[in-house]
Image 1: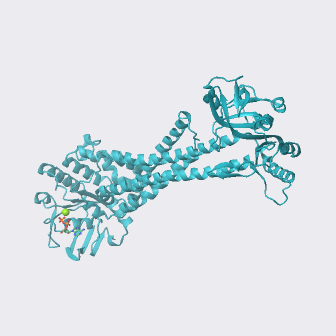
Image 2: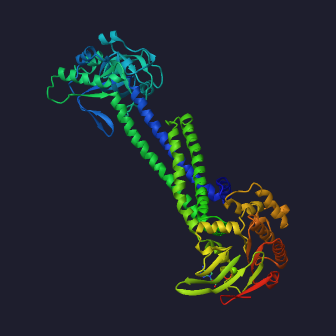
Image 3: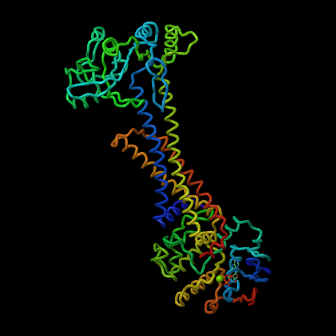
Amino acid sequence: MKISKNITLSCKLLTVHKLRTALCISSMTIGVAAVIVMVSMGRGAQKHVLDMIRDMGTNLIVVNAGHVTLVGGRETQSAIVTSLQITDADAIKSQCASVVDAAPETSSKMSVQWESENLKTEIVGVAPSAFRIRNIEIEKGRAFDEVDNDTAQRVAIIGEVIVEKIFHGETPIGYLIRIGGALFEVVGVMKAKGIDANGVDRDDRILIPLNTAMHRLIRTTFIQRIHIQVTDSTQLKSAETEIRELLRDRHRLRDKPDDFTIQNQATLIETERESSRVLTLLVASVAAISLLVGGIGILAVMLTVGRERRQEIGLRRAIGARRRDIRTQFLLESLIIAGLGGFFGAFLGMLSTFLASKIGNLPAVQSWDAMGAGLTLSFIIGLIFGIYPASKAATLEPIEALRAE
Amino acid sequence: MINIKDIRKTYMKTSVETNVLRGVTFSVQRGEYVAIMGASGSGKSTLMNIIGCLDKPTNGQFELDNINVLQLDDDALSALRNKKFGFVFQQFFLLERTSSIDNVLLPLIYTDKYPADATQRARKLLDDVGLKDRTEYHANELSGGQQQRVAIARSLINDPDIILADEPTGNLDSENAAEIVEIFSRLHKEGRTIIVVTHDRTVAEHAQRILELKDGQLKG
Ligand SMILES: Nc1ncnc2c1ncn2[C@@H]1O[C@H](COP(=O)(O)OP(=O)(O)O)[C@@H](O)[C@H]1O
Ligand SMILES: [Mg+2]
């Protein structure tokens, strides 16, 4: 029998019960669209996090004093540690071949005051090289330089959140603020960066020169971390080893464990990518379940169709249809429903992803492979859930079918 | 061409045996017009379904053009029905929301080769039964008599040797019934073999031979 004849025939028959067919198709549509949207959103979230990691700076290694542990997925540094010093940063910069630059920093939560306004924020003392290494851009005013740092000037660069909360959006360049009791001049405002991968608001802080922080404010000879830039990403692993050996040597650790923690951007990206891949897969599987529901819909509809069309099956058998012709016809109908559902779902999924990213500004990555998978899945489901009703229709005896009411 | 010998059919339902056919023997020659009569429930349809290879007897012999039909497998029987028989049923069995011409063409999708002149043939057949201007009408837009005439056209599309009609006028008024009977007479004149099952004597009288099914046996 001609397959093309059969397809046109199946299509015609599907139009007989328009509403039922439409419902069946739309449940498949939703399933396929859900898979695509879920994967796209998952990928988008992943890309967002990776962007944030890259946003920390390029080819970056961070050395923290003491131990940094993950608590609830976020980094937590152990309380006041006295293991890193500025000289460690200098040594890393001068002795490690693959290191381009190193910026030591120390920070502390302190109160900030201007006129009657005051709040607590993170005061970060950084070396001027940090602006370049960590991609910190200045929105208004200026950054501080080596001279400011060497002479421990009381200058401050403030984040967007502080501008909002204390100055209510006014441009505060040249204003004097009190940090922990000492007067500082606001010389610049940082470009907003938002929340980082650890959930810390990078705009809710004030940068001051490292020397000012160590000698005039926090009064400490220890630093908390060093941001290190490496020549290129392939050097990240070897640089990490080099830095570890240097620091262990300098701290005379011999067989004691590290008194510092090294974080490598490459490892960070890898871990992040892995965890979000697992998450994406999980969410997509949940979406795939809705496809399964669509499949059960097809099963139910085709079983009903098989019962309702018993006389038609009988007539077809009488005029020469073989069992396999009946089976093919029913299977084709399931496949057409599933295929159309898959097709519309692919379209709807890609469209909603597009709209979500372009208009809704949500992180979503157009995923053509997810579309392909959704389409394939819908056909497989059409096949799996179509086989049983089709076989049932095919095994019906012609006389039984003809005698049916 | 049809040779039936001592056919028996027994239905088993909840351990109660019903002997519907108890040794039916008869033969039909090519070009014959035979009517089978009998009371309701006498087994006419059962016999008809066996002749049409839709059902198998419990016992007996059945040869069609010297082929032992009872030995054929399911696919072979389907092919045989497609080639040799044209079926006309009391309930017409047209596909709903499908045009007359598509209904007539339906048996062709189960043939080995879809003929190039299929549409012309279907038109001609519809024309022959007086439905020239109804080719695009759907089944539900036709009267009972018109539907049965579409069904007859459908039974002829594969140019079968034998027309099997089971109560073809059972759902029709006398006027429409007369038209159907007239078509059968014409087909007979054109040389077709026709077997009609009916309990209506006025229908049966057009046949050359009337057989009576009674107590599971044929008398005639
Ligand atoms: N599938 C079946 N199972 C059990 N009994 C059946 C079946 N089909 C038909 N019969 C019985 O066989 C008898 C003959 O039926 P049928 O051939 O349809 O008679 P007719 O066409 O002469 O009215 C009836 O009594 C009917 O109840
Ligand atoms: Mg009957």
